[in-house]
Length: 420
Image (tube, rainbow, N blue to C red; front, top):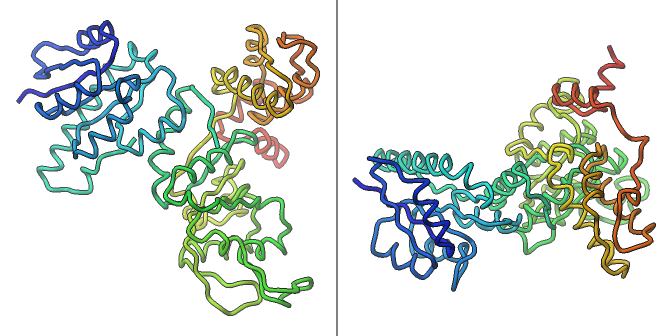
């Protein structure tokens, strides 16, 4: 039986190229083409289209709106969205709406054929599952500002789109300054809990004797200074999301009580006997290797597996250098608007210099560097000599390479060397 693939794009040259690029003799695939969302809706009503590849730049509605209308009409065709510069929110929304994949147009000559081949494989697997009546296996995979156009971050946006609408605990890992809290906020903002404010707590910034009270609350007189009953973070974010930053620094005594909440969904205030419950979605973050912390008995293994249902790893800035100019320009705009500095631009050479740096402090260090450059700028164009790079924080590449190969931070590697 012939399969139908529909290409939708206002660019007729692209349509002809893509059709020729994807056609294969005796493949049993018929390629349909159109240049508007309106025509696409008519075609999908008349033909059984199994795979759709649509541009976001359509009229009178864009590709994302077309996807929404197709899903509203119970059209289950696999949908691939193409865009020149897909934003984080666009990728997340498309994934949540049901897009199978989102591709950058500049990568189509290299990726389109392989993505389409995998899509047909998915379609065949879904048909096979339907025939065996395995309902769970045929569920359609759906596909604060996160800045990034690198492939690793584009893939991250797709995962955020999938996990945001669930209640699964999420563990975000990555070096300091990679943007873990930004990602946590993005997950919350795209979740059903977004009507309520995300509650964040830094587990490493609160003394052990106060952290339990901060999380679970306390009764009046339960300890010195407890002059009144106080609700903890778990009570405060009922029906919302609790972000536990630097979870690797949480004392073992508090880890035990957190584990109980995750297992049983109940807790008690410090000094109280009343059993309380709260509907909370947990997102935790750490710059430590928790598997190593478990091995060193500094973190509970059972809690680690409870938190690590879905792990999102944020790569350091040195592994996504193509995002550095984009981030630098974003910070420039943010800083100049906040301080009424007018427009300040980066020269091409300055962008290259930024991409050459190590950035031990990652995105946070880059933002601080742009703030210093703006404060010291004499003109509205930043040159190479205007970029104040801190030389003292550079780490030899061989040290970083060794740490990367061992899947640990430079700090963890240094600690391991000292112990040995």
